Image 1 (cartoon, rainbow, N blue to C red):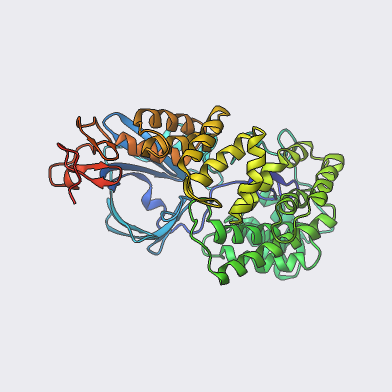
Image 2: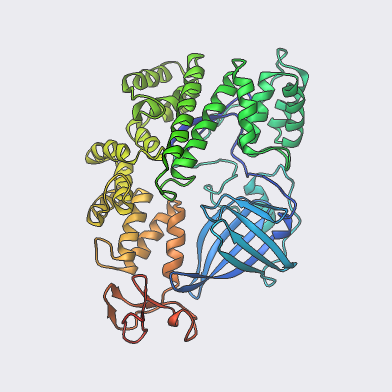
Length: 516
């Protein structure tokens, strides 16, 4: 991977040209190393007191739920901490918050929702070896630290794969960086350093040339800010807009492409959350206006880059045209762009992935833009044709009531079809239906089996739900209004009303009757 050879990856359903590779995010690092080690806390979840274990190292964090039956994965990602504030790649509200150390082995953390947990260092865990070089891949770092390599879905691995069958566009090609005499010496030095993953040097050299007005270096500064590859304390994500505008306004195609990504991502995060389907609160009129304005800017910059024959921009633009995001729908032009990619894109792998399943790419973009009704309409015709991804999205829509009214029977129907197609999200929502008795009789054994399948396919939400189920023990022999009553493990009498709940209601563990 190099600056001059873009790597193609899927970013939230958009085909995007990343001139910089997928790697661990680094916002700051003052106290990050102090968190290295194994930490344990107890978390009340739906009336159950569960034990959460978090292992921190130079590669990020790895969480798991601990129970008498073993450990269940609960997600992994990047983590940084400085000046009493932490950030991570976990879903909201655990993506950010505050922390304070009461001593070296106790940390009190409060997430973005105001929920506080006290973490204690597990000294029985193996001593953490010295941190690896900052240029190590996450796989290499984890192996040095813990003696094992995380799964390929772990952020920062050598072969990043945010979605199945998404190999690097440059796989098998030489990444040698050639000196470009048309660029300033500092920019060439930055590109060479970037190829070595020496991001500190790349940032310093890019910045020197960027301040002198070099558009390629300005794109480099903006891209590093956009992907959180800049050294700690040197800039923020939002500042990428300034540098990318400076580059794009000089006609730099890389600057245009990254600027299109910036506006799309910022609009998507505001409209539907970083994890679409999680942040689903309705937008105010002012918020909707801002979101739509950013989508229009995104589409405009992709158009400008596409006009300069940038095939990655074309791949980003096509689903927006299909879905009518950032402007009127224009499926004819979207089709034309895909035909141009097929005919002339020298990167055959990029061309294949950019033109595959165009219908669902439009669905996904509409969903991420919070155009839920449009997404449901687009997905319905695809789902009826047997598209498993569209079937899974309809299961989500009917389960959560997005774009349609909540209809658990419809959710079960579409989730069941997606489950047969082995689509992780469909399997997950079918598991939720069985776990909660929505549209089907509650069956925790069936739900657990489904979550296990989804976990094997890399579904993060299934990991958490599996952990919740592992917190249950045997039914007490009674049946409440919502089904069998289950009690949390290890809870003494009087704690969370003996830890027993029936479909979200605290109940007496002997009779199954509501306590309130």
